[in-house]
Every structure is written in C-alpha cells, then in structure tokens.
Amino acid sequence: NCVLECPGIVSRSDVEELSTIMTGMLKKNTGGESGILPETFNLACTLLITLMKNSSSCGALSLRPLHDASRDAVLSCLGNYDKHPDQLLHSLYLLKETYAYSHAENSSEPINLGLRRGIIYVCQKDILPWFMTTINDIEEEDIILGVIETFESIMIQDTDTEIKKLAEIMVSSSWFSVLLGCLGSFPSENLKMKVYLIFSLIADLLLGEDAGQPIRGAAFHLPSDPIDLLFLLGQKSSHNMHLFSCQSAVLLILYVSSLYDDR
Image 1: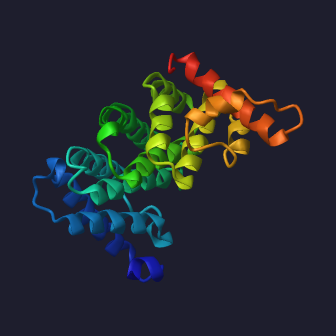
Image 2: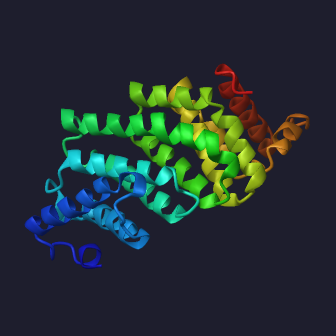
C-alpha cells in the first residue's frame, strides 16, 4: 500500500532490494515446488507490478530478472490452474506489465527488445498451446479473459514482425473458432467485447493498419452467440446501417480466419 499510494516514500535502494527478493521467490517457485503459499505468490506478483508502475522505480528494476520471474511465474501456474486460478491470473498480469515496463524507457535498446521477444516466445510456445488444449476444461471466465487480455496488451503496444508472426500462429491454431466457442459458453458482454477487440487487432496485423476497424466499430452490436453471426448474413441490410456494419464485421472475421484455414 505504501509503494502504491505514496510515490517516492520507498527509496531506490529499497526498490532494488524488494524487486530482488520478489523475483527470487517467483523464480524458485517453478513447478510450484518451493512451498510458497498462494497468498504469498499473489502478493509477490502484485508488489512487483506496483514497483514497475511507481515513478521512483524508473531504472531501478533489472529487466532480465523481471523477465525470468514473470516467465517462471506463468509456467508454474499453467499446470495447476484449476487449483489456484487466481495465481494464474496474477502471473499473467505480471507478464503483461513486465512487457509494458520494457517500453517505459529506452525501449529500442537490445535488452528491452530481447525481453519483449522472450515474453512473446512464452505466449507463443507455452500459453497459446496450453490454452488451446485446455479450453474445454476451463470453467472460469476470468481465466479466458486473462489470457485474451495478455495477448491483446502485447498486440496493442507493438506491430513488428514478431507480433505479426504471433498473430499468424494464433489464427493457424484455430483461435477464431475457439474464442467464438467461448462466447457460446460464456455469453457475457465483457467477454464478447474482448473477443471482438482481439479479432480486430489480428486483422490490423495481418491485413494492414486499421483493417480491423469494421469489427471494432460493430463490436457493441454483434451478438454473443456465434450462431447468430451467420444469421446476420442472411438479413437484408440496404436500409439498416447497423445491420450493414455488423455484416461487414462478420465477413471480415470469416475472411481473416479462412486465410489460415480456421473454419
């Protein structure tokens, strides 16, 4: 609370010491074998995130330990997400904020670029395959939102070759079909907006800047039930601009997914 509410009250040396202790704890927790209590794990993630957001921490946090700790935190939680879903959510949040922190200062330096590539690699090689193979067993909507928001945050901040490659792998892994299936299981407004937003970001990356705008513009009016998307295409839209925009969005979704055989 002190770090969060009173910027500057924690000295630079305190920031360095706290971050060293927290990153060390998370790195030792690989596989969940270090005996860290779930509450302690969550607190370690939260404190690191708070330190990264604190103005007095600029330049005081070492990027490599942050990268390793955020990666190890996520990997340690994927296997036991059903027992401690809150730990997975905290670790995903830490990974996302570590990526954002690498943009804070000197974002083009090799160490910052390397950190971001490392996080993209974790998303591509660990989080995405885990998500696609366990999606039918996930009962918590918050976990689905956490995964989507992690990918979304990375895609918003960068548009380079590595991010485009990640988008291509996602679509090739049936990302569109799986997320539409999630909408059928969890028809909430929040999840619906997140799903259509990431669809639009993928369209931007694969087809060019702002190519996904039709999806973003119609997201509020698009249905949560994926079956209704096809129903929309059968309606006459000549005098209904809302329906026309929804049909344009649906056609764009179908087109992008078909490019990578996600049918």
